Picture 1: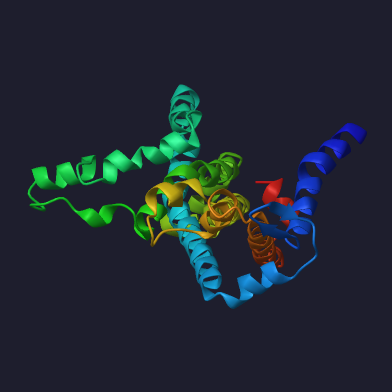
Picture 2: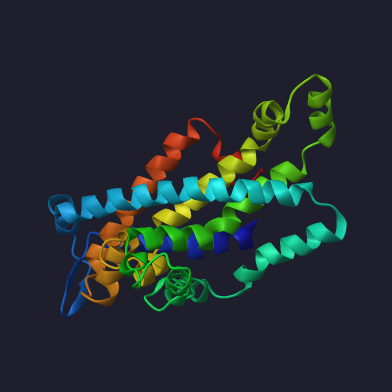
Length: 274
């Protein structure tokens, strides 16, 4: 146990402890100094922009989670219904886009949603619009599209694992007892796949709360999230102490959301079982 414990302490616990300590330091043009102060948290609580962006981040993460669920469940159900070589091929197709960089997969949406992009060219070609649509990119909607795309696998995979382990005889038994397809889905299939649904929802929500690259590239001024505010403190304003305070606030809020959710589902089941 010792090597694993040391690894967790050095690469998981220590960075969080340092981040928490730095949130009480002061930053200036000369660097960050370890002087204890509550000024950083005072700035976070007094400036309403931080609360607004935090609430927007939680809303976007929740919406992305819901959309991802609606998109991923049919995909997972389709994969679970396949057999043999066809299942292997479609699973590889599902994983194929994720073999490339996260940044590259996000950049793909720029030529697709831009003024001269694929979507505008198609709409103009079929006569839906006479001029390119500017609202397809650099807004909150584009952020939703990008996040749903990059997080689809994290929702589909646990749901697929739950459905794939389900005994098909249960569906046959439901049919023998007179249950139709809709009733079978809501009374048998959906309840048995709930561990995977819960796992996928929690994972996508947590990843969505910490998103940075996608809103930075696609969100513009209206689609930014809390991660972008944190990154700005480290890269632009060079206020590492305030950035650490913002990070601690995000960790605490997301942890609170997870704790509230944990009252209905055990955390161990979410991250370990599907």
